[in-house]
Each structure stands twice: as C-alpha cells, then as structure tokens.
Image (cartoon, each protein chain N blue to C red):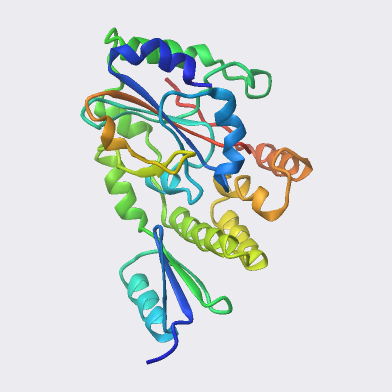
Length: 201
Length: 94
C-alpha cells in the first residue's frame, strides 16, 4: 500500500517503515509478499509499537522528522483507496500533504499544535496493555483459555482500543471481518463513537 | 531454593523464578505505579509501563525508538533512519 509513495520520494531523504500488528509473521506475510516493499516492513506480534505510541487502531500513521521528532502525531490514513467505500477516507488528502512535507514545500505541524492533537495513554489504557501482554504470552505458550480471559479483560478496560478488541480476534478463533466484529463495530458506532479518528487538519 | 515455577514477563523478556520472588516483583511494580496483569492460576505476571512514563515520552515529541524484526527476522530500529523523514505506518491483516 505504501511502496508507491516510498518509490516516488525515497531519493528525497525519506523512508517508509510499516509495522504489522499481527499475531504471527505468517499472518502478515501474504500482505507483505503482495506489496513487495523495498522499505523496512516489520512485524510486531507483541504490540511494542502500540504501547510506545499509544496506537489504538489501524491504520495509524505518524510523521517523524530528520531529528527523530514527531511532527505529526497519530493519524488515520490509507496508502490507496481500496477501502474508501467503507472508511470514507481518501488516500490523496494525506498523500498530498505528505509529498509537500517531504519535498520541503510545507512544514509539518508546529510543536504546540502537534501536542494538542496527541492522544496520551491513561492508566486504564496501560493496564489494558499489560493484560494484552500477559494474554499474548499465554497464547504463545498454548494456554489459550487463560489468554482469552486476559484479552477480554483488556478489551473491557480499553473499549476504544481495537488493536486489542479486534486484533486479538484471530487468537480467540474469531473472524476479525465476521459477524462478531460487525456487531462490536455496530454497538460502538451506535453509542456515538467513531471507529476511525483522523486528525482534524 | 524454591522451584522456578512462576514467570514474570517484562517487555520481550519472560523470566521463570520461584513464586515468592515473582509476587515480590509484582508488589514492587504496583507500588511503583506500574500496571501489572497477574494470573495466579497460570503462575504468571506481566509488568507494564506506567501511563505517566509513556505520556511524558510522547509529549516530549521525541519519537520513541524501537527495534522490530522483518519477515526474515532481521531487526530494524527507528534510529537507523535518523537524518531522514519517516512515515511510520501501523497496520494489520485483521
């Protein structure tokens, strides 16, 4: 999904790093094989990145500048319009802004604005991540019933965290595109909560 | 010496130890304000990182470094790309 923009801009001091929050490398492999990425394409079964960056859904994109500073915090963007009919999000909006930033035609967000737009983790979020972490370890040990208890507890603590609620479905034997997901999504949006939270600018 | 029948997981590290030692670490982590997931039946605990620590790091706008494997198992870190603009993308097959 992101290989095209990487190829377009790699000569300008730019790199794409994609990270799959999947239960095993094998779950991510078909996607990576199809994308044929020449940029780093990584797999994060333990949700290390989600913990560090307070990532609660996918896709999540961030811009990081040459000095290693976050200049655009967690946002929702797609590399292509494959899912536009479902998400209502157009890839071009983000891609146009990204190109202009990489080419130096515009600056990213001022620091104060970047901080305003950040969403920082709460104690409940981090408790949920600890429950996920224990569940993930138990799952890897083959102790699936115990793992499930902790995944469910994590989802109760952080109902907005779909890297937990949806991301653990494959480990609980549930189709993450199926009926259970649609019911969860329906209940969530009916209560007035958006599934995707793109930045307002 | 008691049997190492209890596992404490912290980050990517899982260490087996006697239960009393594990529960002592749990108590200490909780006293330090860290989130802990404990399962006495499974004799395991996961020690997480406090919200305040994560929030402080993010609010500094210094992008937290990480090292994660590609499909071949080679580790890549964010710091490898210092000097470049980075688009960091989290996605999943689900």
